[in-house]
Amino acid sequence: MASRFPPGCFTMPARLLPDRILLPLIVACALFMENLDSTVLATALPTIARDFGVSPINLKLALTSYLLTIAIFIPASGWLADRFGARTIFRLALVTFTVGSICCGLSHSIGEIVASRILQGLGGAMMVPVGRLVILKSVSKSELVGALAWLTVPALIGPVVGPPLGGFITTYFDWRWIFWINVPIGILGFVLATLFVPDIRGEERVRFDYPGFMLSSFGIAGFVTGSTSLGLNLMPWPYVVGLLLGGGALLVTYVFYSRRIANPILDLSLFAIPSFRASVIGGLLFRIGIGAMPFLLPLMLQLGFGLSPFQSGSITFVSAIGAIAMKFVAPPLLRRFGFRSVLIANSVIAAIFIGMPAIFDIGTPMHMITGLLFVGGFFRSLQFTSANALSFADVPQARMSRATSLTSVFQQLSMSIGISVGAIALEMSLAHTGGTITVATFHPAFIAIGLISMSSVFFFMKMPRNAGEEMSGRRLKPKTLAPDPVTAMRERA
Image 1 (cartoon, rainbow, N blue to C red):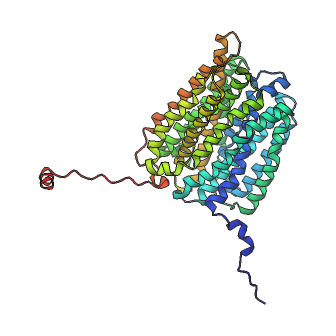
Image 2 (image 1 turned 45 degrees about the vertical axis):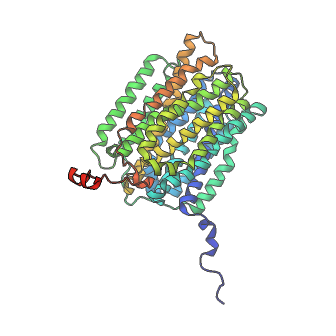
């Protein structure tokens, strides 16, 4: 007897949503874990530092070690996805990150938590870049802005939930419980990836660039570790200078090396694409300010204003709510004005709000602080969405995995540099106040990161007017020639 059910009816759950929505929501599980973890940890830093008997500024190693590990191993993520399949690598990354979270929850010293964060970084280095690669290869460019909005909206729930949840757990329970939140999320992401993520592979197999990986990895590690140690007296000055010079020399060597081989692990020739160059370099400068915010703001609210971790988290979470609101405005705004105009105007506006805490003092009403943070998150989110989408607007499909690896390296570097810049500015300000921390101690740091973020406007101004028009859905009107004087006189007559 013939079945009354049409073929494939039992696979309907995979078809309830189109790929442009379903895949970003699955990858968002990974982004949710990363963002939740970072915001929760930033809120709990003063309490963790007190338990470990170290300075909160020195404990930033728990943040930078994670970001540094990601920056080192991201270059290999694109090659691994092309070689072994995106689904396999994405699931492996989820498992690694979840195990690292468990280890963080079991840590009892700064050394243990830094080691656990490095394990998390190994997973994070593959998790988000490979997930983004799946979306880029599965969704058309005309739908990519909307797909990235679907990707980042659920992911931004992490910063919404993270500060108040982390503050609540840190204030009323044990901070170690904050890392166990990732376990059920990681399991859910693994199951969804197994069911629905396509096993995308590279069109051709290429050999792994071992020399390039070693040059870029050790170069990034040396340079970022050296810059992170500036002003913190974590190691003797000769070591810091040696790391900076050695890391810089390795990176310069890699630049020359990459020009001589066909398939470098970091394809720097992508910078020949104007839209890619502007979005990556301009985005690097802008994200320096973003990277410093989660480090500086909770410290300012807790050490300067005397708030508890829960109170601090209840204030900082509003910036993520503003970010979520902008995700639904970004596609029509880009369609109306184009990438270039939006990025130029918004980089200035968003940078002003990044530096806005420099005007806060002990008498500033909390509702004013909350409102300004909400609006700031609104504009920062627009900058993120626009710059992220523009990075891939003119990149050929065959080079998407390389573009994903390169942009991810620069994004993580900018976040690590941002934390370093914020800490260095804070240390210099402390030297002027004799070591006493007040609200005013944080003002120079916020001014510095705001100005650095604003400098990104110069790179966006160099973009062509039609940059990313296929992706934004905007078509520029062709210029019309002015009529000759005789024709103009006849029309007026």
